[in-house]
Length: 396
Image 1 (cartoon, helix red, strand yellow):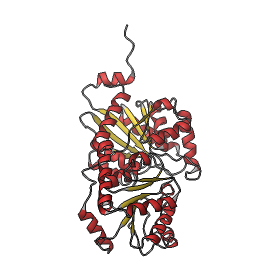
Image 2 (image 1 turned 90 degrees about the vertical axis):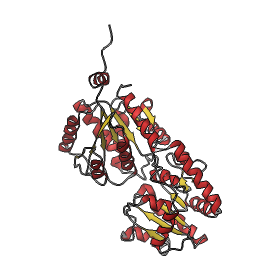
Image 3 (image 1 turned 180 degrees about the vertical axis):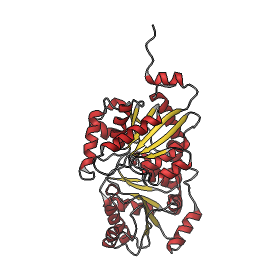
């Protein structure tokens, strides 16, 4: 006598010719690396085999309308910050029940917890938790976030079917925090080589926009204003670079990173960089800005797998990064890695790359782009996700 079919196997048998319905539950759809990766993944899923929908716990943000433009249903639950109210959780449960997914993939801690519980409540299908963070220190996280992490760790042996991390370091850190080790898989973020690439036109046009001579060395940082990004430390490192190389200018872009933000601009003034620091705020031309740089700096206290590294490397821009998350693995021998928090070392390594000859820097950047093509190309990363989904849903 054959054993009874599992729920995923029953779904496969009944829906052999139907695409696999996947509901993505994410904390927000604002500007951020996890949100950007979700959009890239959903945009490239094979729609003959997969039918995605997205539920945001909060608002539609920046990515909600973009997802709808590519034909992906999006629903915003409207939860406010703080403890979720029962009505919001009920709306989430109803949204999942209506979506009838064969698989639920949650992104980030609050979505992992609430999405996992709601999925269990309505029997929507197996849940995959998504981890996109590697710093669990008390110094750089809210107490409420760490409380959610501890609760997720306790539930991890039973609530999710699998746990998908975008970085190996993040996997190790969460296993050390008592997440169920046997449930983990790692798939890195992916990058669009056709969208991010070297460009002489970008180098020239950005310098013209900033009122700089074409030969001006330009160091950049792309990222929203957030304690994890360590903008204060970054500016101190850049101040040291400026003292050694007064010809160097510095480009910043990201939500909140602008002169109109008085608190941020005070940091720039304290670092004595007001005459050479260009804070552009949120921009929609990141590929152009990235391709204009001579070197990218990442000063973060904690990252799992920052998208900006892959984007800069795809543009053939060398990177100097702190050793957080998988940054060292991503950069490899195509850039420089310093200890987290060591801004003196960050400055020294930036100067070292700036002192390379143009030919040496071009060769280093070319190796960076080749590394992205070999390990982090978006098409390959999406295919790995697709295979993971089939396996997790019990389909072959």
